[in-house]
Amino acid sequence: MAARRGVTPTGPKLPHGAAMELPGRGTTFVRTMDGPPGAPTVLLLHGWTATADLNWFTCYHALAEHYRVVALDHRGHGRGIRSKKAFRLEDCADDAMAVCDVLGLQQVIPVGYSMGGPVAQLIWRRHRERVRALVLCATAPYFLTSREERMGFIGLSGMATLARLTPAQARTWLTEQFYLQRKTESWEPWAIQEASLHDWRMVLEAGRAIGRFNSREWIDEIDVPTSVVITMRDRVVPVRRQVRLFEGIHRAEAFRVDGDHDSIAANPDRFVPTLLRAVSSVIERS
Image 1 (cartoon, one colour):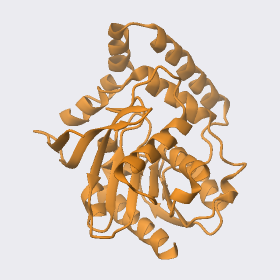
Image 2 (cartoon, rainbow, N blue to C red):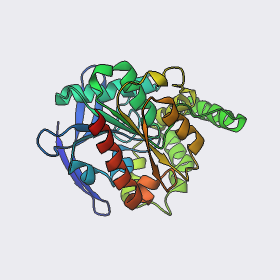
Image 3 (cartoon, rainbow, N blue to C red):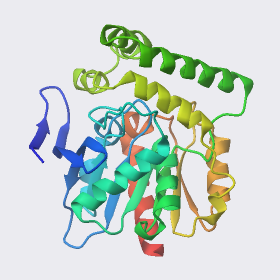
């Protein structure tokens, strides 16, 4: 791995990061922090249209005071794996475990935010022996039921097909029109640069995959200590669905944050201490 340490001119102080080749899968980008000797490892799984840094930059150093920290960019997001295959959440779960293989990690605590929640759930389902506990934040066991939601995800499916067929110039236009244009007034330059790295064909397909995700048939089988962090003013993932996730997992514990879906970045003074309590709880119970 070629080392890359991050303090961007206008961005936050970021931990060590490097490109990592995952045998048979491709190249992704991984940040790591060692934490105290012998500390458990938290595996940070970011949300849709984010990157590891955009999602977790407020949490890296606070978590590393207690735990070893590993965070990766998911497929198509940021500097994540590029592939001609259709985006699947299952592949994201297997990518994350491939990162752990390269790092020699046998057991981890997946910490999933929004889309990272389904990825964490799938890591448990596909690699149970590798999961010590789960922390699920601002997420749900399913993401669409209403006609409006279904129409929205149908639209994403069509845009994903368009993006697959259009040339690079059209993908650049799609990035600017669909996402960055709405963010430039409020985002720091480093964050805009992060988002501009996406492969938008894959990101749009990820939206379709999220819309299809449903773990309700097997969520009650989860048998490791689990914390569910509920963002109580969430306008993206309704609170009722986050509560159903909590209710569907035996002996899960809920931790509430008075904030919207972006509270991890917008309200770190509330979110980060709650996340630390949620992780500490699963370790005490594991």
